[in-house]
Image (cartoon, rainbow, N blue to C red; front, side, top):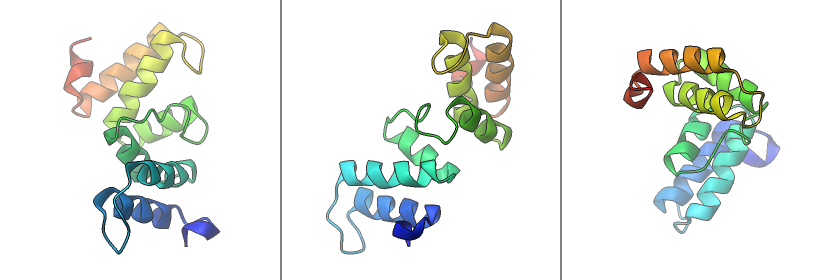
Length: 118
């Protein structure tokens, strides 16, 4: 169903490649490709799985910084921290220290300990 736009199906195929299950040979590169499809189609869990594999999702998520902020508003602390970093560095958006600070605070509140120390 991934081939017809089903984001969750893309994530599930990615997970099967990551684990080497469901008759698929383990392949991190294929897992990443399917997680990116899921993420681009709005599946926040697919984006989170990309994060866990060490893949940057700032430019992957639909809408770039807007996608990170949307995920942050939905309770994804990691997305809050990544959006804060983007605003601090001016990566994919204009630098904005106030927004970065607010996003770091939200990331901290959502349990991203590193954000509490900045």
